[in-house]
Image (cartoon, rainbow, N blue to C red; front, side, top):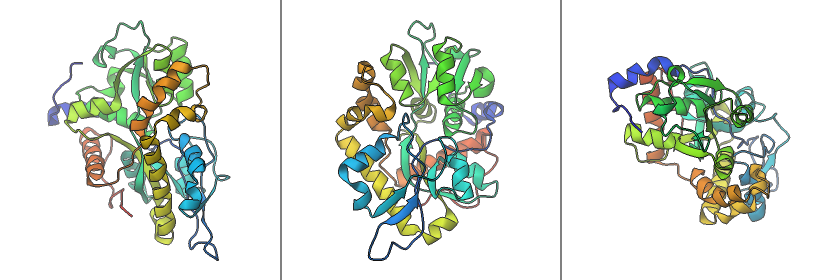
Length: 339
């Protein structure tokens, strides 16, 4: 794929194309509640969003149940709170949920709008994939200029990351492609009907598409690395909380982060768990090729590192997003913290 070197001029040239709405991530990892623990050493209760099959993070709760992780980390997750996927950001901000996933750009956007959200642990590396039909003539992202591409709404971290990864390669995202923005299932329907030339699909939909014969041109993470020279994985989102809630519930937040980290590490140690729980991803047993591909494609998605290398990635995303106009300014306080 031909790209333009990353320079201030090429970044600024991409600026106008990257206008996105306010927003944050879609992933259902959430938790929270009041401290201290229940009398007698009971588990800390935490409000979380209900399970949502068909997402990259959906496997976590099955792994947690298999290995008894809630009890191990002293948590009692209340999954009755909240609504469906896509509502989690607003529900975190309004206090319906205590913890939900945010990315660095989404967290910066809401914090510069008067909120105070902080990311306290990792959830997922970026898993957006550029997919085209098997017989598509297009061989690179640049080839798709002027073509119809499906992607999540501008308020999503998936959209923001795709826009930023395009910009650092000198491609103006929302002007050089004919974008169809919508929820993943809606875009998938358009794509499978032949109404789109390409789709930026997230997991597990991307693996299901590849399993049925579609081609993956590139991942958003690969484009980011190519355009920036950064060898680290591209951070998508992490466990986020309101800062006032964190002040009163720090131990609960830490237990939740540790709970998620252990689930991800267990999956990385034994990727066969991914195939075992393929139904959590919404992949039926008859899609044998997709199930075969899932472990290799999904295991690297789970972010089990929360250190200076990740923080540098977050800072670089924010800096470049301001440079190209995806964000107007930085938040007054860092949007991440190590507990």
